[in-house]
Length: 242
Image 1 (tube, rainbow, N blue to C red):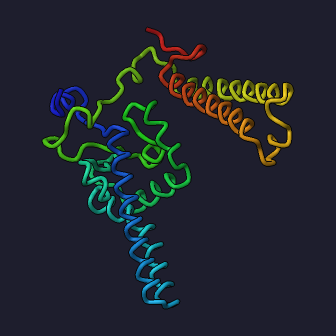
Image 2 (cartoon, rainbow, N blue to C red):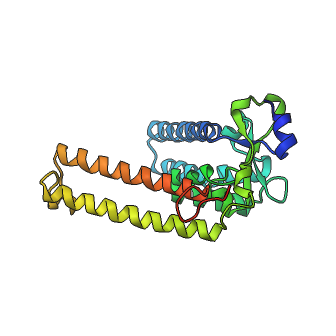
Image 3 (cartoon, helix red, strand yellow):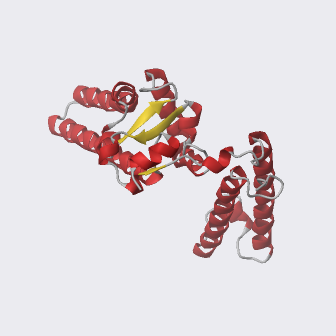
């Protein structure tokens, strides 16, 4: 399978989550290098004025790094190294304002923004959806099969329930899962596995932390699964008609 054959069916090769994640890690390394370098300079010079200037520079760099590079070149250093780029739905690079909006949404939602990549036709994160953009392979000649993925054609089939219906079904399942989680949490306090003070925010013992962690992980995993399956039309009440 090549980028060309994927393009023949879909015309676009969207970057996989792992590819995007690698780009994020590179950008984090860049920021850490800038921060450490600034810290070393500030400590070496022992000047409050220089420290303030360097601190201001680091903050400005963090705020403008992604918006400027994405709007001008189509991607950050991490994007370029991993052969991906941010593409506006209208074609070309996104505008500076869209790039700023992407950064704000991604910062607020953190890794949760990427959950929708498993449910959307064009593998878009929340910050992609809200800014009407996608992340695609930059140079097809340099791409390997595991770097990209085609759109999910099944999400656009005639038998798929409407988006509104799927959202309602997902919301119902999420509420039901939260109720189940609350019931199980109450049961753990009833049988003495977790104390009420721990649930209320007081320090917990190692056993209590383990029980609470298991409950939270199960609830989170089931919630994410409900969202993915619901959007793909695989939950009762909003199933796709085959």
